[in-house]
Image (cartoon, rainbow, N blue to C red; front, side, top):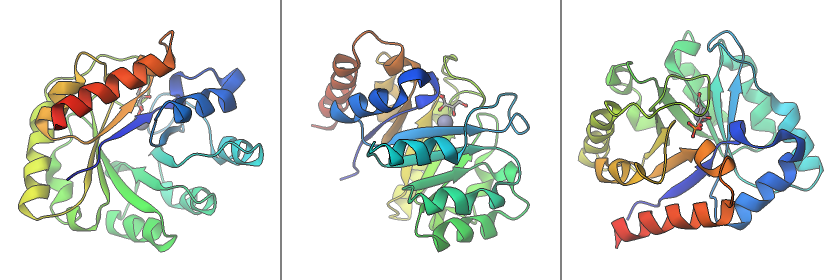
Length: 224
Ligand code: DX5
Ligand code: ZN
């Protein structure tokens, strides 16, 4: 049976208290921590680089990292993140000249590899890559910012990717990213997603524990 993952995005976390923010969501059952790396070139926003991850680890904050590279020319930064033993490195097909080479580069460091597909980008890029991917990241917002509205038209894309994965008997994770709330996650589950990047719904909530437990309960009820 597919596993189901809750993946808080730190983009909406309190950066003045980031270590404790991460510790608490991990304590309450988050599976991975989603690092939104933005370069103000591929997307109109600038966030953080490997130095934040290095500092968290140096201060004993332990978690598995799901790196989402929203930047141009990703090949040069992949080795730096890989050196930090991150679990996933996901990139957008538009951010490299050679998709296959970038997939091999990520895998050469022993990291799992994901391809991120923007809302209006077709699934064609999966035709020659799906068999190599550990994760497909389906963007349900246009990349660059948290707190955006979920774009419901991506539900059809999720269903399509789920049928491609199941038809080929792959174990590829379908991760969805952007605008995910308690009141729409069931639609994503029904469409076939099994990993959920959630930023503001968790980090802007008053109680991280009850938010995460509520989301876990929705997943559990759908599965059993
Ligand atoms: C947007 C990022 C998302 C975003 C999710 O470019 O890739 O990970 O931070 O945040 P929410 O859940 O607030 O939409
Ligand atoms: Zn993201």
